[in-house]
Image (cartoon, rainbow, N blue to C red; front, side, top):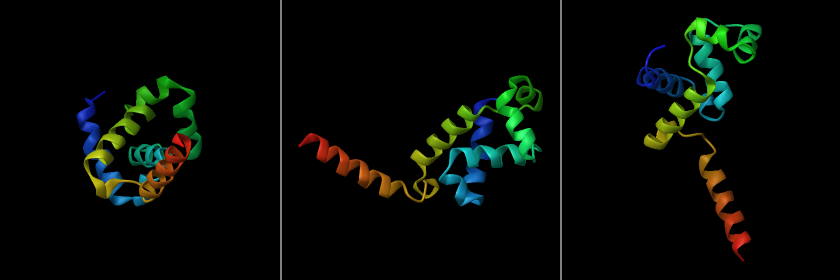
Length: 100
């Protein structure tokens, strides 16, 4: 398996090309896997059910793709989820309410 720094440009390309992948890490992982030939739902499920199958295909784990996306989102504001600002505002409201 290649190094994780090889994964970063792939994930960045997906986040730029498919904005809907910014809102869901599972959607991002599905797009990553289909980009590498695991195109149908049964094979996608098999990735989670059988680690050897994923390794044989040379695909990164869900966690690796998720961490790479998180890093890219923190560095590039244009790659963040469409509702990140709303979530942050809601979190601040809950935090302020809890501290009262």
